[in-house]
Image 1: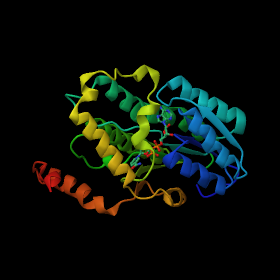
Image 2: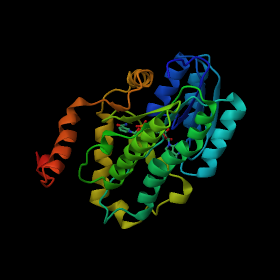
Image 3: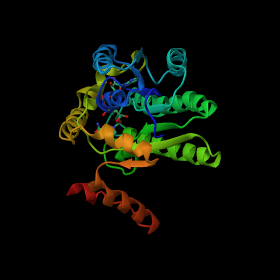
Length: 285
Ligand SMILES: NC(=O)c1ccc[n+]([C@@H]2O[C@H](COP(=O)([O-])OP(=O)(O)OC[C@H]3O[C@@H](n4cnc5c(N)ncnc54)[C@H](O)[C@@H]3O)[C@@H](O)[C@H]2O)c1
C-alpha cells in the first residue's frame, strides 16, 4: 500500500500510545480515520487532536474482546467511509505473575484483548478488504515479547507469541491467494506509552476482587513496579508511526525496533536447534 490520501484507516486502541501516534500519522497523510478504544474519555481527547489536523474522524467506544462490538465497528466504518484500507490492530493490555499464582480472570482478560480481540479484527476486516480488491494492509501489534521469553510474564508472552503466529499463518495464506491484502507484525521493545496503566481499562466482565490475597502479595506489587519501570524508561514514542508507515509502504513483514534484543532472539532459536536447554542464567546477570 503506497497511496494513503482519502483511504480509510481503522485503529484499535487509538486513544493512547501507538494507536494515537498512528492516528496522527494517518491524519498527516490525509486519511479518513476510525479511532476505536474502550476508554471513552481518552478517546474523546485523542480524536479531538486528530480532527484538528483537518481530517474526517469516526470514533467508536468499544471493547475489542467482544466479537459483536468488532462487527459493529466494521459496520459503522463502512456506513461512514465505505471502505477499509488499513487496519492497525493494536489494542492490548499487560499482566504479569506466575501461572500458578495469577488469578484466572487476569489470564482471561489478557487473552481476551491480546489474542481474541486481535483475531476478531482480522476475521471481520480481512474479508471486507479482500472483497474491495484494492491495495490494503493489516498491521498486527505483537511485541518483542512474541519473539523471546523472559521470567514472570507468561500470559503476556503467550498472547504475543500467538499474535506473531496468527499473523505469519494468515500472511502465508494471503500470499498463496495472491491477495490484495498485505500484512506486517509489529514487534517493538519497550516504548513510553500508557500501557502500565491498563488496569483502569479492564472490562467489567473481567473484574477482579481487589481483596484477593494475590493483589496484596509482594510478587504482584513487584510485577506492577517492573511494568511501570520498563515502560516509563522505554524509548520515546515519537517517530514510531513514521517507521510503521515506511514498513507498510515497503511491504516489510517483521517490524523490529530494538536491535539490542536481536542476539537474544537468535540465541533462543540457536539453543533450540542445537538441542540445548534454555538457561535462566541470562536473567541473573
Ligand atoms: N509500550 C510498549 O513498550 C509496548 C511494547 C511492545 C508491544 N506493545 C503493545 O502495543 C499495543 C498498544 O499498547 P501501548 O503501549 O500503546 O499502550 P497504551 O495503554 O498506551 O494504549 C493501548 C490502548 O488500548 C486501549 N484498550 C485496552 N483494552 C482495550 C479493549 N478491550 N478494547 C479497546 N481498546 C482497548 C486502551 O484504552 C489504550 O488506549 C499493545 O498491544 C501492547 O501490548 C507495547
